[in-house]
Length: 418
Image 1 (cartoon, rainbow, N blue to C red):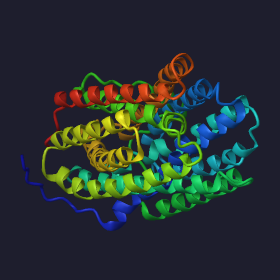
Image 2: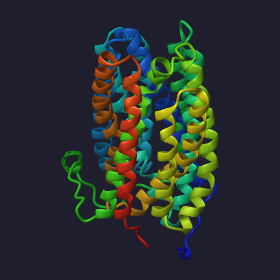
Image 3: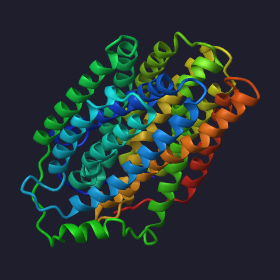
């Protein structure tokens, strides 16, 4: 149903860029690390037999740290009185500290040191990300959240293709991991500085608690008054369980299930390019549509498209089916990514936006903890007892179950109309 938008100040191009560009650097980094860099490094350090279990532990513990950090520093930033504003100081400090931790990554020579470095990166980068992700509700009127989320979605999709593409080119060389780390550091810092310049923030003028009071209250997050926000959290959590189940096994699925061991990096690059192109085609119109029509309906349709495409991975026997599935999934996920964020901003409790965005972030980071802990043992058990590679096809079934549950939950969400 179409709704008329009240007269509010329309955001400028600078506003949209200011709340979205750093997402490019973040997705560039995480797209490469979660899909290629971390699985490949784990396999190098522990071998093919133990890779599933070790990767599950590393990604899960890292995601737990990310979840806790986002809520904590989001809540602290909500009451920050720094002259640069509530969010920018954390964006600067978190990115600079991440840069230091990044250069420890290539030096990790055991699974334990890899885990330690990975936890440092997760902590410091989420010092930046927790406050940063509150900028859409901070700076953009609710009537334009769909358009703002579409901008964010496009930057995220472009990062998702750039990161794995760069990783696939560099990881094969002797010093590839080092130079990839340099590239990560350059992108994170360059886009951080650009965003700091673009964002207009004023210092917080309300009552400001002490640091200890802010820390103590950061995990006091009442959810009962916001049932639709909770249902959206549950929906996104289930859907991201599916995403991270696939991310966990995609490299191994290509190598061990479909048999493309030597071409796996190149194929993932092709998949990222295709899904990004179709994702942008889905994202561009979805923002405008979400500003005018039911976000819930558009979100449900996007989920059904993705669910249909996911069946291609499940039954694929050759690359033609996989490519078609990737293209369709990219279009559906482009719509999902933009509209899901717009709906979250629509339902966000207004008294503490960054703290609740930290809770919203848990719907993304908690699946990074739980999905590998479930997927790793399942893949290990089936690969060792049935046939190598069958475990990853079973994980595709599991991912579709998660996605279906997340789609069903959307029916309980009620959008805010003012």
